[in-house]
Length: 611
Image (cartoon, rainbow, N blue to C red):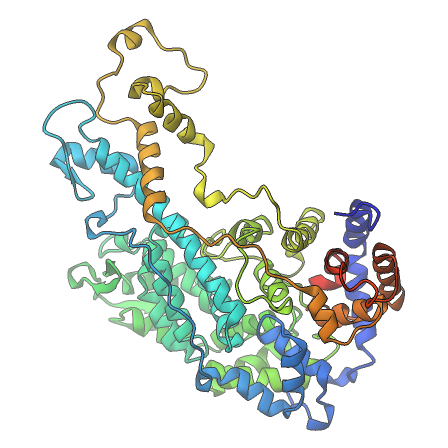
């Protein structure tokens, strides 16, 4: 960063301390745009009230931002046409490439053992595990089983990170932004993580299912989720059997997926769990095991019968509170956090009246005055994924850069795709903003416009906890396995030195080395190109002639909320100082780095965190 351009620590401190004030001042500034009566009003916005700013707001919330050209195109439509085009996206051709599998999985890995000790004990007891037979004799007879178990843990995590990159590129380049935005919403709502599922194939299959049903019928989606192999693995379906029901899924479907706390009893959960007994998976397919299903009478939410899982889902959906819970959560994601009890009831009725069809519900919400009210516009704090993808989209990028690493930077800001923190998913709103997180958000922009020349791709470097690099180096020098895998700081006994290689069933450190090496061989690398950014061309094509013109254009393109004219002028002066002139034509041959630095300053403002 150019030290004479901006004092970054002071900038970040000012951003952090002014963030709450910004939320308030944004509301005040927006008050000039919409009548107070619009708040909570689900009446359709009139064509006479439609303009460029409202088109930009619609595109920001229903997708991942938009370029000025896209905004102008939607501004020329009527509000009803604009909303319908976004929501009824199935008619829009969207030729995006499927995920390119590395082929890291093979059938011998199933059933995958719950732990490394379980895998090696199975090998000792039966002579085989994970498709690998035990050596009949010799040292480290079950080494290959330990290798194979750790290999799959490494490989599926690497492949899941590739799936996340593939999905991020879909978000960036899709012609159906709401399709990906709704998929992201459902991923957080039905949070499932590869840390426990341990199978990228199941995570990919779930992602594709959420996308296919993103704006369809909620009942169909809920049943599909209940039968989804990733969800079944995540919430322990294998141990939910007759006589010993596991309550995990029954609890989460009521607490997190449909009704919310306080609308069911512990007895309802126990009885519902019995209805889902026998639901399991085989590989990537749902299976129903009749012998493990409890077909007895159950009483759930006041109704009694020989219910199965689908019937319990229908009982849950029949409760008005379910429609209110689901509708309100969607509303908070797309519109605003604060929902009055009256509006909650209205939203629930709207979803029930549509028979849980999501698309017509969204059409009403996105076309309503409330969506464009002062309480809604410019008040949404972007999640890390929204922030990163919308930034790249507004930059005009055609692919997600490999430098910086998308997974690492979103993880550092609190949201890593396919790896939610728990079954409740990610928090939202102000939880995304802390002093440390705001600094990371600014650093992400800097690392994008000025990519590191010493970047190390973390998905290609093993963790230090197993000393994998040290093991590899020692083996390359011709050391025996015992010496090569000696824990750091641990002295070798004279007996070990004499024997040179101790007798053992397997060596965990050696297994870690073998596993990482094989995973790197098998899993394709993530492309590591930096952002191909050309801000000089951007301001030229916008007809900018002065430093102030350039800043005004960048502000309009990237920031959705009002920014004080004094701030704009100060940043323009800093740009002019860096260029040595206010005249862009005079600086045409060398203005790129100065423009990038100015963009970093703009995107470090508190206003950029809002959409």
